Length: 426
Image 1 (cartoon, helix red, strand yellow):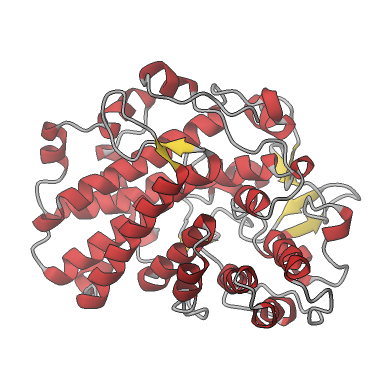
Image 2: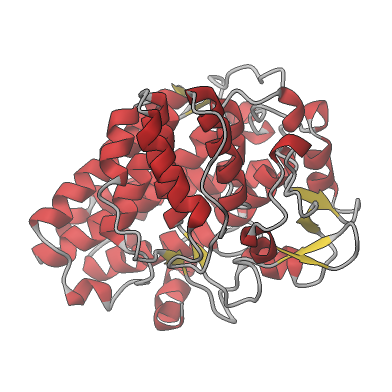
């Protein structure tokens, strides 16, 4: 983020991160909006603040999502039980309460990201230059969609709007809203491509055209809309990279908080938390990419969490190929699904340096067998991406492979919103 430190400092000053300020930005007053977004420079600062809020720090969405998902789906283990909230997530079931700090942060920061994106989109006409306007609109739309998608992965319901005692929407409504936001952004940048004036003003590590289609594909698959998922996935250029950038000031949160001192969490084993019948093949090169044997039973994370400055992908090429494979398999086109699956199994590298280098698929040719292999490869290819809990539910995996299916609603939401639904049993 070196080119945008000025912007992130400005944005972090505007968007105070302390809990006492969160309610203001969940339901911002007109005065605050006027003060923050009185011209295009305010929009730019607030745009850069989106990536900072979403991806930086132990309280950001990226850290909370990857850690919570990893502990719930048994990708990670807790090294120090003194990290109480992480330890309770690893135990799962009734140990995970609405007061858990990790899921409370995930909920709050997702809503704050969405709300600040909404402020940008509401005030987008203050960016008079059409090419600057389209870039800001697309950038804000991506983070709005990411925030909504994260809420839909971990909770059965979530509010889309803001206000006192705001009603909750179903996760299907939340995902559809995210997709609509992305489709509007896709139209905007196709009609008026963002200018260099935009790319020099914001954190320019996100490939917006490809990220928009990748997220449409991801969320359409979560909704079961296989046709839309396949159409969007086919528009993604797999040679392009899209990432959250970090430096020595704005640090990779997983490395800084967890792997840099080996006292918080780490990958549970080289089996990546999979049951014996699905664990990676011994020759699978993705295992050595994502883990580093430190003792016979404990592994340090490598992958995208090797240093404070390491990038974290927004999506991976392998995810897009596996979306195609899954959508085709669920549509009954099994031979085509296997063709896509084999692209992941046999590749030796990709834009991010990930490759399995394995033989082509040779298992059962029925849809059920192929879908099981697709799930297995999603768990390996997308290890510690924060997506496994959603995958575990969508593929109807045994409940024993995760320690919760949905998260309870945060206690502070329940205390301040009478419309908060009852917590799920598990």
